[in-house]
Amino acid sequence: MQAAMNITTKYCQKELEEYGSCVASNPTSWQEKCQDLKLKVAQCTSSHPVIRKIRTDCANEFSTFERCLRENQSSAETCQPHVTRFLACAETVDLSGIANIAPQPT
Image (cartoon, rainbow, N blue to C red; front, side, top):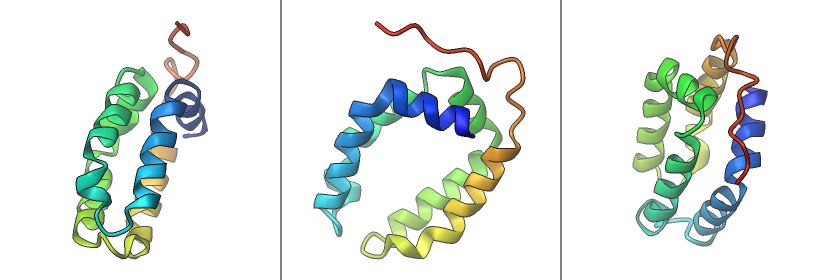
C-alpha cells in the first residue's frame, strides 16, 4: 500500500491537492461540487498498474466506503470503519512484479 500511496502522491499530487482543498472548502456539498476534481484524481491514478491492481482486488471495500461518503456527506468521519477496511485490504494485495513499475515523468 505504501508503494501505491507514494506513486499516487508522486504522480497525482496536484490533482489530490485540488480535490482535498475542494472537499475541505465544501463540507456539506463536496460530493457534488468536487465531482470534476474527483474524476481528475481517478483518471490520474487509474493509469498506474499498482493502483489499478489495488482497485481491482479491493473494489468491494472501496465501493462500500464511497457509498458511505455519499450517504453521510456532512459527517464523513462516520465512514472511518469503511476506510479502515479498504486500507487493510490494500495492504494484502500482492504487488510482486508490479510494485517497482513507475511511469516515466513527463
